[in-house]
Length: 332
Image 1 (tube, rainbow, N blue to C red):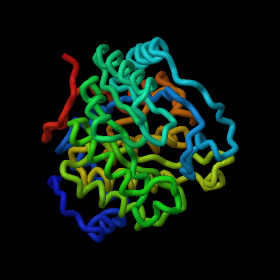
Image 2: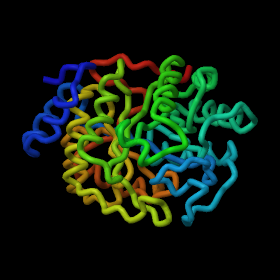
Image 3: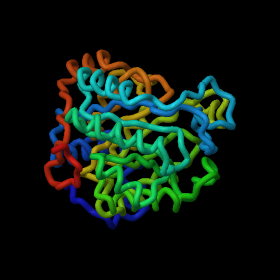
């Protein structure tokens, strides 16, 4: 039922997305159980190690310097602060710490050297380490791999056709090149997108088509619901209905059976029942902690209570899917 393919067509994925909702959930749930332990959810914590002042013009992002939002620019966190955040995240049930910096691209300077030290420190705690730092060269990706980086997040955000309506300061090909550089360094890929930005259903499918044709598929695909932030170009967008999130997650699960599908931004807008449907449809990862970089998120205690209600448990670090041998940079 859940064959791993890299030859999906846009029509095939669109037909899946548009199928009757309950049938779609049933099929996705079946694929999910075939490929993963459906009682496990990978819990990540996301921290902003360098906040605000980004030169990019991503229409959804409050950290862009050109937009007038309530985000204050903060200097880079210290190694001690990151280590403390990792300890707290691990104690709260997280197996992965993701570190984000409001950069357009990585530069070979002292700040990058600090990030490498942060990666080493978190890796030594037995946690998966993920970074999202903007564009990377092949050499920079290799340095991160040598430091013990487990995953690199670089979202496509939307379809190639819609991309220019969301971002103009870098190209779609720039994003694909960074993902290629990450792969060459044998770091696992985390790449997904955002729905609710005014895109069409075809745009959502277009993004999934690109991801589903990657070989191998991204090991992690975050599905974000836009969190509208006043002062950004998308600050007045309506909240995404839960049914659209369920459809997107279910479709992602079916076309990328071995991938970890992350229910990401927008969870504070969802009920426990809505999130339960997302887990049933194949989501098996979340971000926990009171913030996602700069936007609100449920805290660890709230999520652990939800896990208890739904009979879910946190997935251990470095665990692979049933039918895949993921490339990893595990601690020695």
